[in-house]
Figure 1 (cartoon, each protein chain N blue to C red):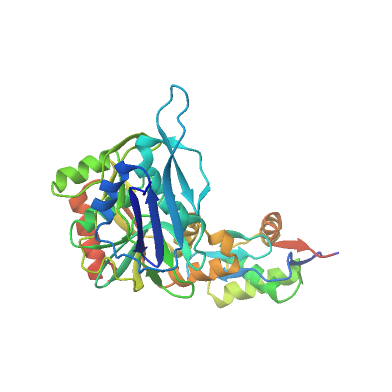
Figure 2 (figure 1 turned 90 degrees about the horizontal axis):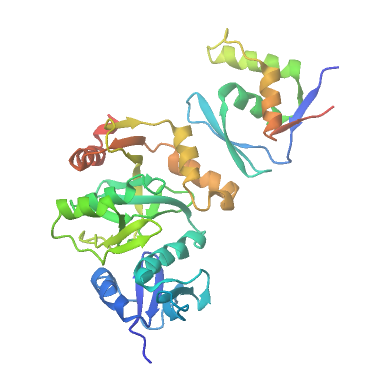
Amino acid sequence: MNNQWALTGPDPPLLYDPGEDTVVCYNPASGDTYRLSRPAATLLSQLSQHPASLDSLEQQLAASAGAAGSEGQSVDVSALLEEMEALGLIRRAH
Amino acid sequence: MAPALDQALRIGPYTYRIRSELPELAAPVASLYGTFPKADSGSYIDFDVSLSPVRRRPGGPARAIFRFDHRDHFAPVERRHAFATLEWGMNWCVSVHCNEYLKLHAGVVATETGAIVLPGVPGAGKSTLCALLGLNGWRVLSDEHALVTPGTKEVTPIYRPISLKNESITLIETLHGDAIFGPPIVDTHKGTVSHLKADQHPDTFDPAPVTVRAIVFPQYRADGEQQLARRSKTSSFLTAAYHAFNYSLLGTAGFEAMRTLIDGTPCYDLQYRDPAWALRAFDYLARGDADA
């Protein structure tokens, strides 16, 4: 079974994306602020719209990378999701 | 007995009432605050602060205590540290109140082209830079607090005498022999402290907010390379948030305020050891050359 992922809190994290390699993320549920890699921020934005499976998130990230002209860069989506889970930004929604 | 000191001053957007029975405070307050605008009779007092003598412990030194709104918030200090304690107490008033602003622990200086915010931990050299700039034609808005109005890039001036420590005092005295200092206060938890009168700019007491044109993270290094280098926005955001008194307290509003401040504002790291070099770097920033 492919796990579903969802935001931890009811309010989506706030992002500040100045167009650099990293993005600032504020989690209103915890009050914590983080610096995220661009792929992690993309995943978070996807999950801010609705819960999604690992397969779906991998496909969306690949499409996003293609649109940005950065296809070919290998991203371990599962590892990114687990890191954001550890930060309390997202959770597994079985 | 009438207090040796009792006056209400306009300091930035706030009114302080400063009272003390300690006669030794009258001279430094007159020297450093004598040009500050006086509050109108009957003005609302934001911060009612005082320094009062307290009972001496057997065999111990004379002591005094800082009070805010007639309440004790701190333990008594040695009376010889009374003026430094008054200054720290006045800083504390802003640091723990005033959440209508996003407050950064930062110096703020300005020319007619706008303000430059200097966030930094104690020892980074922000007060020294404020002193150097203030004695070289720049306007000092604060050496301690950047009061940023949320949703804007504007800082509200809150000038007070600049608190210099240890070698910085000697440096400024050497470079500017006519600078006006308060008394040197030795053996504090920060070493020797002395306060510099840096309100020579004609707009020092203008309360109007000033637009931020750059954010500079200073670092004094006695033997390091000197450089002014652009800094990423995400790094600047996080470091500025670290240096904020109330970013976390403001929650989502703090994030939004910081985003508005940082976005589109050039950010730099400044490493310096030579005051003349640092002044040239700031003139460069004021002219806008660094944006080219």
